[in-house]
Length: 96
Image (cartoon, rainbow, N blue to C red):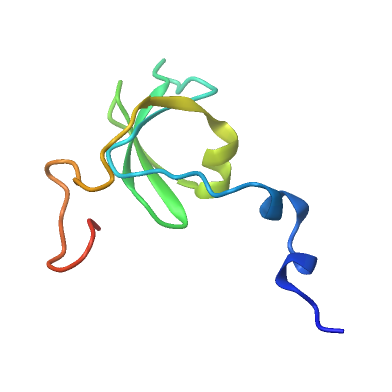
């Protein structure tokens, strides 16, 4: 009998859909940053998500799975079709 991919994945990876995060989203995390801020701007997407603190400007990289556990909610959603100003855009492709 052939094994399916879902047979070898942990249960939490098969039950939940992937959280959709876009460049320019403002997210609120459950715990405060040492500077006192709770709101972060998403500035990099991939396996790791880049976040910049809106209070002090500190930049951190966090694994997508950790972000999904730590996020309390979205403060502001970005338009997925329009990258935020100042972000590089590759010709013929989505924002980097």
